[in-house]
Image 1 (cartoon, helix red, strand yellow):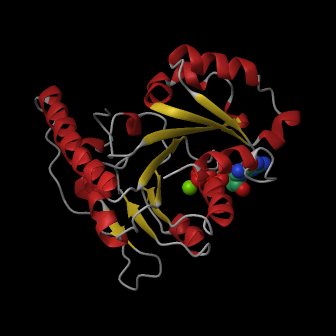
Image 2: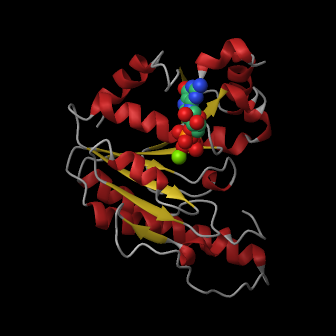
Image 3: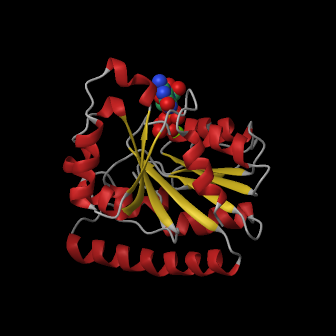
Length: 249
Ligand SMILES: Nc1nc2c(ncn2[C@@H]2O[C@H](COP(=O)(O)OP(=O)(O)O)[C@@H](O)[C@H]2O)c(=O)[nH]1
Ligand SMILES: [Mg+2]
């Protein structure tokens, strides 16, 4: 966990709002930065988070909701993938979306255009979503029984790996412009995920990206990872991903 970015106290900064909310404002609650006893505090934060995550998991299980936590570095194409996925899937299954970013409603506004319910969580200085934010967001959304909840986490390949949200699984997205070595450099995220989506394959002819090496590196970290290679832009490979989603919830 970061010691300097304030992620340990991220929930104190969180602002949860629906798109087009006239009361939208950039507000951040004040908090104290006390970094004494850092290890104990971090342990407490993760223990508290895990407890709330289990409550979320119980809620999802009782309502037969499949919660999928999309994690990646900024710009890998999470929101684009969601926009395209929702268009193809929303007639088959009810979908809700929680969008996480430090600032702005931009992604929630993009998802809002697809016609599914969405809330934006602005984490302020925080670099990940946590289980408490998700608890509040699902109170706002009130997702249907037997539905899919997509959670787009804050773009960051580090901290979101540590925070269980109560999701069924984490899905890590890497785009071919990021280089094939990311699973080696950020192993925790690939270890914490069940699915790895390799996006922007339409750009493969233009970038030095070794697909097989990338998958090998990822499998060295987590031999159970399942891969989808696709382009959210052109739709190439999307059919396998959509077929997999149709088997949920
Ligand atoms: N060429 C290409 N560009 C993509 C693809 N998916 C997303 N993008 C672009 O990548 C940029 C970041 O996408 P966005 O969905 O906002 O990424 P996020 O930050 O992970 O949510 C945008 O300019 C997208 O149009 C893809 O499959 N191929
Ligand atoms: Mg996004």
